[in-house]
Length: 120
Image 1 (cartoon, rainbow, N blue to C red):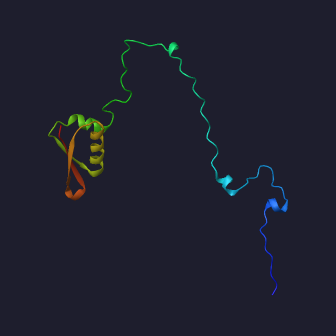
Image 2 (cartoon, rainbow, N blue to C red; image 1 turned 45 degrees about the vertical axis):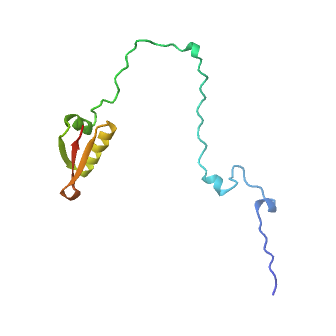
């Protein structure tokens, strides 16, 4: 039986030139394009900065009661409760945490509805 000589051949070993613009590897093709670089800020010259005194702070662009849950929290007094669907109750509790208002919850109707009590 005759032995077959198998060799690995590559573009480099055969002397064939790759076309201009061709990727060197399949991994080069899969790479995302490079990110655009931001222009660098010039160093801050403290001597040229104008300091304003007595300027009132403008109100926040997003009003405190802009969500229905924040409005509901404003209406609830300590000791008051509401019964909501589970999804709405979770949103109300999340809003209460954001506004640092303590609430307690209890599952009602087998988990379909949740009672939310304002504690403070």
